[in-house]
Image 1 (cartoon, rainbow, N blue to C red):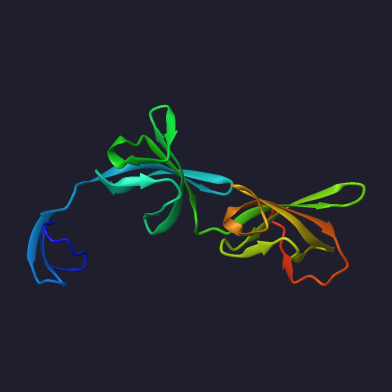
Image 2: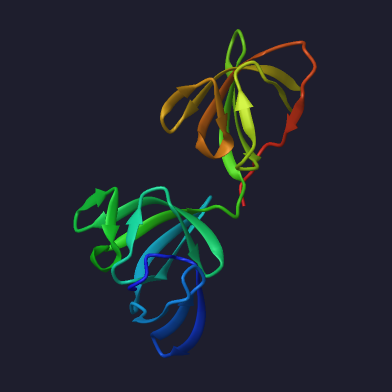
Length: 187
């Protein structure tokens, strides 16, 4: 595109050729939209995975942790495979496979509650945007516990969103729980 503005009104489409008017300066420009290519993607949905293709422009750069729209489903990119190695970013036409996680399912988080004689371990399903913090009082079944630490993909945190958390650790308490968590039993 010749114009540096990004806000356009499309006037005409003919195949991949697009004619548009810039909403900022009024200049009419024509360009050819890049051809889209199928890029293999493996989408993880908890216990199951699906291999499919995502259609991307040939020169589009895919970046680790970005969210792609795969047939109407939001998928977060967790790995980009090129040859025999994994990279943080790559142009679509060089990618062998994208590995992603569906964001349309709740996040499964591990929970460990340390009792004097043993540790109870659970998996819970929570909304991805739900935040947890050290000091939160939660309940699973008959066990009420206080969160003592959170382990995320980037190490220990005092507070984090569920989609970053790998495991929540806690100890029993007699305090009143602010939330009841449901045990995840699988699909």
